[in-house]
Length: 260
Image (cartoon, rainbow, N blue to C red; front, side, top):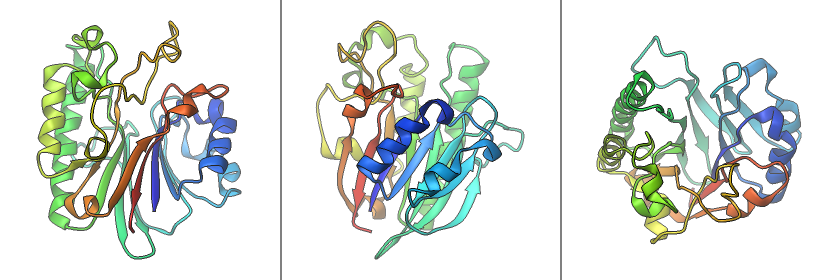
């Protein structure tokens, strides 16, 4: 089973890029972030024509997450538990049925949090507390599960080409990285670092100042796997070449391959 996470940065603006990628790379499941569309306006037909079931949790103009799957999906839920007043569309879950195992998929778009300090950063940290609580539930369920998406977290200095430029940013503040580590340390495997070490591996490049051409990137899109899911992991990689295509997102897909 090959699963990709991809912050598409606007489904309407990137639909041709997305459908080209789905044809070329053919994930079994794709977890999308920043679809920036209400559910009714999502261009599902163009994606369903490629053989995908489409599940969305959207809102107008901002945020929004989706699951595209060629495999059967069950028990789809929307929204991260823990705050009934939170109207931001940042979380979607479903169980995907593989050839040999079922896996609980959680697609997420974690708040950016800038400017920090401030209410947006407070919301980010509160959201991460809720994420930790859901992560603990997933571990207790003992079903293979993963949480994947745009975490808006630079875990370590090696995950930025120029870490000194990010020291005051919400993505790299000590509180942010500590909250991320707390979740990982519950017993999750950070899939990419389980397979690849060292600097120079990024998932986001700004549109400004030739960041892509100079490889001035950061790694903020992650897969966290429960122990039983980590046992299925055969590979994890970044499909960086997608950033060089026409009208690209500022993010690129990250993949895992599971024996499921």
